[in-house]
Length: 169
Image (cartoon, rainbow, N blue to C red):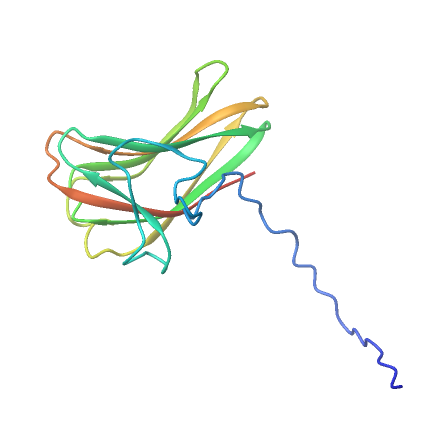
C-alpha cells in the first residue's frame, strides 16, 4: 500500500463568493419566471440568448411600461444590483431599477441603467453590457426590487433583453 502525502506549498485565500439574494436571477428554472412577479409584456426567451441560456425580452413602444419584481429581505447597509442588458434599436426607452421598502412604501433607490434618446449607446447591434448600481438601506425590512423598461411618447417598436440579475450585500 502506497502512502500519499499532500504537499501544500502555498495557500491562496480567494474569499467567499457573493450570494445572490434574488431567486432565479438567470431565469433558468423550468417555468423560467419562478420567483418573479411580472407584467404581461415580459417574454421568456430560450433561443438567441445573451449567454446561451434563457433570458427575458421586454418589448418597448410608445408609452409602454413593463417590469419584473421580487420581494427580498435586506439588512441595513450597502447592496449592489447588476444585470446583463442588451437591446434592439431602443430609442426613447428607459431601463431602470426601483427599490421600495414594503413596510413604509418609501422608494429608497431609483436609478436608470440606460436612458436612450439616440442610436449611440447600448441600443445598436445587440451588444451585451453588464451594468450595476449600489444603494443603501437604513433598516432591515422586506424590499420590492423592481426592474422596469418604459417607452417614452416618442419610442418606436423595439426590444430590451435582460439576463443574469444579481443582488448582493
